[in-house]
Image (cartoon, rainbow, N blue to C red; front, side):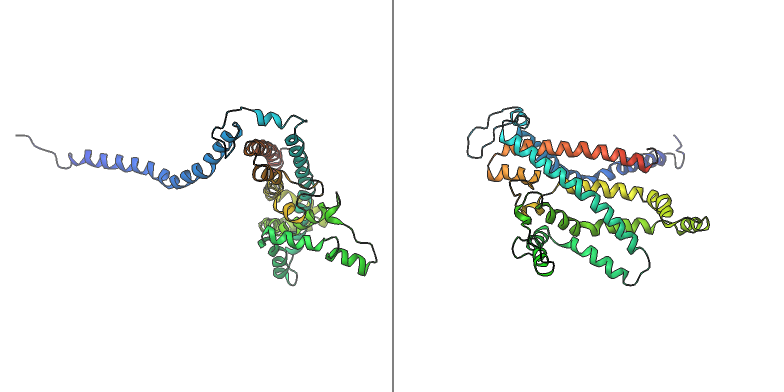
Length: 317
């Protein structure tokens, strides 16, 4: 007859329960991530993979066969004799020009507004709302508004020039170079409120003790901005710069509505030309190749600017 020690048989069961609980706890986080993973696979991985597949074949919706052509459509983008190469790189140049002009304006103007509206002035909340509200408009509404304002004949800008200043009207929408004015000015007016709000949040996180110490030392307003405000806003500036550049590269609706890419394709953005190549010319393979080249350029540029700006934000540059 064997004697059992009380509680001894229960210990293995408790150990197994604890082990099972730990194993279940290890799986639980992945179950929460599963819905996002499924959506990521369906809406990101699959479209990218399918687009790459299309760019490597001669894709025709009406054809029974779609032969594999390899990198033919990618090579066409580097052949100066092909219209795809000419129009694609022209649109890349247009997009780069828009980015080069609009990004400094959006960062500088939004920072200036944030500095003004951070002060305890009368009507501060009202003016913050006024500058932020245009951002809630759709791109089509914004484009129609600024197309009307810069219309060659009945636009508000030309009405002011002729009626108040006695000047001749300028054909903004049909003149190369001038067509960029309503696009850039309209974009700055439309999106400046978002960057201003980010800078306002950054300014609110700076302790006033820094400025009080600077005043005791006799620092000028410029010295306070240069040695306190600007360095402490470096992380915000990094975020604003990266997001603004990415948004500027994705220029599409403004030029489509305001100028239709004209005159003579001088304001046609890259995404606008890719859309034209796919849905107007029915060249889906060529458009897919352009989209991948454009995406690769954006990735490289974003990586480089993020490395440079992050290094400066850490004080290493």
